[in-house]
Length: 335
Image (tube, rainbow, N blue to C red; front, top):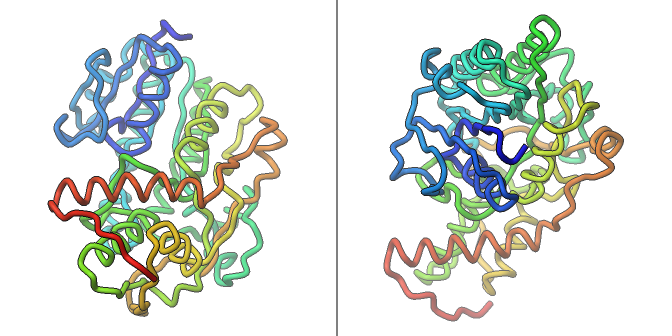
């Protein structure tokens, strides 16, 4: 497949940029990267890749992006961390235009395989009210009561991908991502997710000498976080599989509280901070974790990179980005 055209929609984003880089490393020579953002705003770009700035919410642009493609990875969406998705529900739902038009274009252009990146936000909120959450199984998405806005759009598009497979013969694969993190992504500005936001806050406290950190919620909410390398391996394996017909979890099963995530970042930074809890801030559900039974059954594999290891790499990258942008030297700190 390395000479056949592979398209990554949303390639200017965090996961999409890493996916293009991963395909290049594996010898793929015919790659098309597509994103709505100007090229200067993409996280990663490569001169040997066909880079297109297109608004994929328009069908004609979806057709242009998909023309001649053997595989399409549909990662394009208007999204961010909880602070964004809880206050921009209409924008999140408008991503359905992009996903719909990419599916239609893939059907029209005779695309061989189509991957859609869904989210754990599709899961019924009633099953996520307790911090001691039972890991979410794929069937827990129904009866449907997903996260408002973003979750509904993801669940709807999952169904559409299923019916395009059943009615039109388009080979579709869907993964439900659980909190992907790593370097070369958003770390400030309001769209960043919890791991990056906490890294930035700890770095800022370390550099400024202000030994406080604001935590959204009470810090007891639980999550699992998947490092980008595991996300890439799982994504590509799911698309290649002939067995993963229905949406499948793609996430780490290493459950931590937000307080424990802060503990990890503090330990990496070598400081201890006073914690201020912003109880009225967006914090999402109280508990969410991935049940990986099905992905192990299908692929004989599951995400395994330890959170501490992935956060070390993420912290070091954000620290360098922070210093480069704000010109502040990293100074030694004691606990």
